[in-house]
Image (cartoon, rainbow, N blue to C red):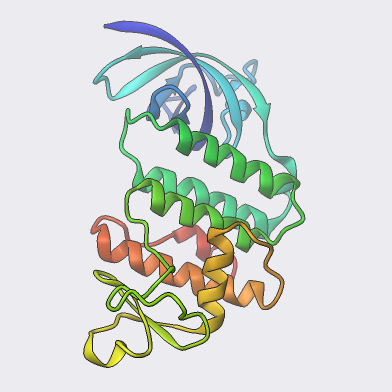
Length: 246
């Protein structure tokens, strides 16, 4: 059944098709992730090509047919192109990493309004907030892990259930979870968790401000979350966008 859909969308990526058209990957509020073609978008008289640049937030009208591989774009109007993000290489790296997570970890035609709003929110923060881009991205990565159903807890030891563990050297097992210093010896661990990293994750979870060693701890947290997802999702091989700038 064909239908006309008007929806907000974030452009994930685009590629040239034929002499005049574009195929874009979109993350839409109404239908989730999908591919669509904009016919004639590369013609000199058309401004649609720049509207459909990656990272842009747009209002889009689609001719939509369920189970069709590539939908048809009728029109697209720019809402925001996040100019502050695109003018800052560090912010750009983490913004591209955010849309890479969506591109690689969501299925086509799987609507998730909460995830869409989270993506728009994180791009707004990259664009307008003075907080470190790496910390903003860590919060989004943690949100994605939760939304995908792979949430991990830093509240207590997964073996003995002890909660007063914030002042000791901890470990983590990707199947069991967090392991306190008393239980480490008897269980296989996949990662060591320092007191600083533990407190960093607690601040992320509780949306508290992070000031000390934020850049260093962000890199440690991102490595942990990447490795954690690689373990649980075979198709996930890490984030190429994070390597754009070292």
